Structures are given as C-alpha cells and as structure tokens.
Image 1: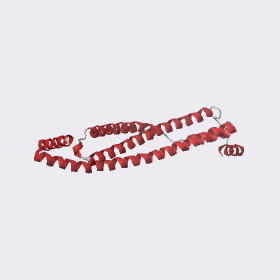
Image 2 (image 1 turned 90 degrees about the horizontal axis):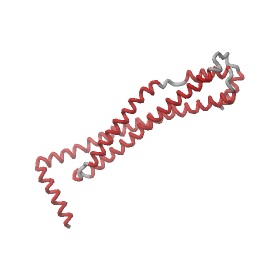
Image 3 (image 1 turned 120 degrees about the vertical axis):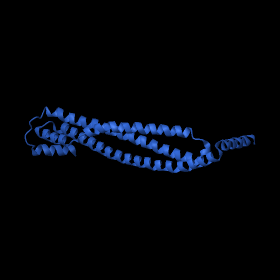
Image 4 (image 1 turned 180 degrees about the vertical axis):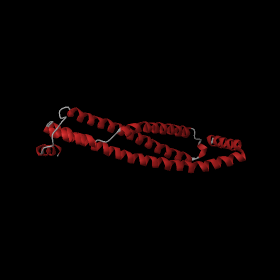
Length: 203
C-alpha cells in the first residue's frame, strides 16, 4: 500500500514538474519517437538483409576457389609437373579473380563495422537511460532496433572475415601456381595423354 502511494506521489510530482506545456511536449515526443524508431528499424533490417545476401555471394566464391585449389593440387600430385600440366596451370592462373578491389574495399568494410558498433553502443546507452514513464512500446521498439543492429554487426563482421580469407586463399593459389612455373616455364602444346590424366585426377 505504501509503495503504491509512493509511486503515485512520484508520478504526480513528475507531472507537476512538467506543467501543461511540458506534458503536451512529452506526449508529442513519445508519439513521434515510435514512428522514427520503426522507420530506422526497417532501414537497418534492409541493410542486414542486403549484407547477408552479400555474405552468401562471397561464401560461394570462397567455396568455389577452395574446390578448384584442391582439385588442381590433386592433379599435380597425381599427374606430376609435366609440360602439359604447366599449360593447364597457366590457364587456371589467368582465370583467378582480381582481389585488389576486394582488398581496397576492406577499409570501407571495417569503417562500416566501426560506425555500426558505435551506433549500437549509443542505442544501448539510450535504452539504459530510458525512463519507465516513456512506456513499454518505446522500450520494445528500441529493443527490437538493438537486436537488428546486433544481427547487422554480426553479418558485417562475417562478410569482412570471409573476404579476407578469399583474398588470402586467392594469393595462396596464385603463389602455388607461380612456384610450379619454375618447373614448366616453356611447356609445349598440351598432349592428349595429359588431358586424360588431368581429367581423371579432377574427377
């Protein structure tokens, strides 16, 4: 009973401190904050979905490269460094993607991660300072926004780490081929026997 009376007294004091104009301003601010948070929520959700799609694409690139690298190394071990295999290695090298832009984009990706983490920190600060009188709806909207930010940060970090692994793996593959060019610098035309043995190794 006493706690209820105390709570009512605090609410009354809060309303009195606001005054008529303050109450109207507070109500207007609360009404405006919900649409603003919801609009921001949709924006962050769209960014998160876009980032997850980018993640799937770069994961597919990375998986394809890993498979090719494994198949080529198996072929070299099985067939040996014949002149014909040297020509095949040249073809694989020329087909490797250029990762220079991916490396340049790494700075932008890491900047985006840092900015998003700062925004997430600010939202958590806002949540901890949110007054109970601002209502459950405002708190629920803010919690939902924070959760979307956390998912976005996680996706951004995963995209960046996958790109970095793709860059390293591509450079490893290129280096692997270059080292074997020392044994096959001037290979003659590819022979049919080399093709057949290479296909068997890759199958």
